[in-house]
Image 1 (cartoon, one colour):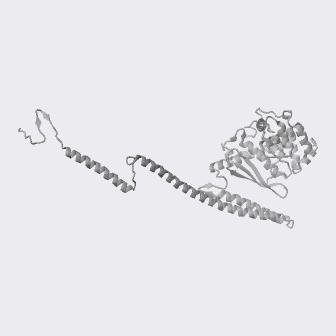
Image 2: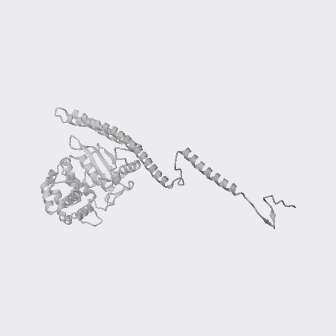
Image 3: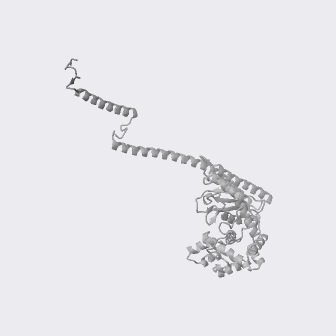
Length: 405
């Protein structure tokens, strides 16, 4: 076959040669560069961004992304602020309603103080006040924002349900039975006790009982206020923080509730009320901790009671507990404490008359004088620190002093 040397492809001496155009390659490269440049320009035009990727300007992109992050954060902060303002507006509405109710309650209390009113009208005024208190509680419970209650501390609904169920199913009943069995007194059957849940943070006041005094000095509108943060795990009978478990705390508060409901407690000294509340579940651990904190000076705990001052410190509760243990030993034992408390009920809360009736001490002053002189020797009246028995009037350790159902 003849071969035309003018053809770009030809075979010579058994080899193949491929020729190409240098101009064509240079044009193709220029076209590619121009295409990329055009694509970049179109991207910038369509997005409105001078820097679309790190290849455009790495340093500029880092700066712009940092600014973008700050702008978006500031925008979200503004939204959060607006949400906060909305929540405060809702809270303000609820508080305004409560304020009006409280103003009316104060007006009624001043009205009832007039000697010109007969007891019948005072009864009606008291009924309206009770309704006002119920309405305050209702407004507090229904004032919510995004499903969160904003006037009662935002208690988790599951915890609230578990704690309320635990209290109603066992803790309250067991605590009340413990008080009745050991002190011989029971709450007024006609006076109910409300349960109010709060969220004040762990480590504060775990629970307290609040009430108003009726005309006869007995408690009305009694409520058990519980801080759910101190009751975790809420479903455990011994929930809370060891060794002061939740059921022990409830037993302490139940002493206050039963005493206040069954007798006039207005003139009973605080040290006696708190001492008997501590005695029901024992407080050896508290005494041990307070002694360690004050340089092992038991007389300081005693003096805190006999001096007549009450600051609500842990040492005051320890001193009150020691006074209750001193009373128990002096009377003769747990059965005699029960008789003493029943006599206190008969005397409608007159502690001085109860001491006189019992005869072990002539009066309250004589008891305090004896406790002042001999109370520091706590081992002499049966207080043993550091063992499993925590000093409850019914015995038991921290987990068993309040029986589980």
